[in-house]
Length: 121
Image 1 (spheres, rainbow, N blue to C red):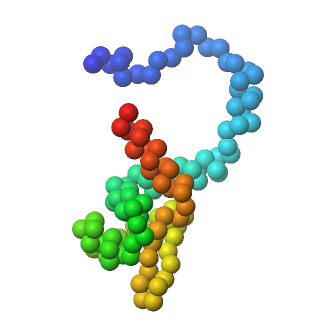
Image 2 (tube, rainbow, N blue to C red; image 1 turned 135 degrees about the vertical axis):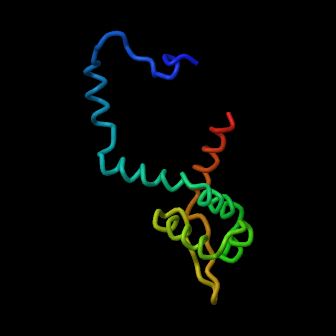
Image 3 (tube, helix red, strand yellow; image 1 turned 30 degrees about the vertical axis):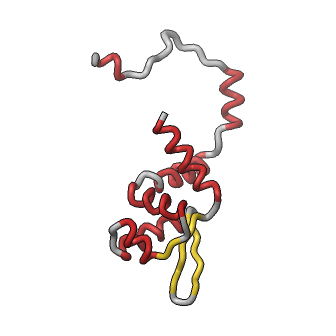
């Protein structure tokens, strides 16, 4: 591969499309919202968290179940669940001494499904 093949192609002349620029400046979210979105997607950048989300996609599970299924310690699972809960990707409910976790809503399964579909194309 030549060095030129790794570079993104560029326009050969500089010409700004003012009307398009003005419209996009109104449509692109504020920096704060974009930062929140970036943080949201960073959570998906960890294989362990993805494995937990996929397990929870199949069924509501407690920490003990997740640890057994994923061959991890309960401590490691709890740490990752805390991150997922802070980002509102999972929710929990208590039943006696057991705490069950599940995906917080249908958006999470959609994100996982669409992401998998994208990489399998």
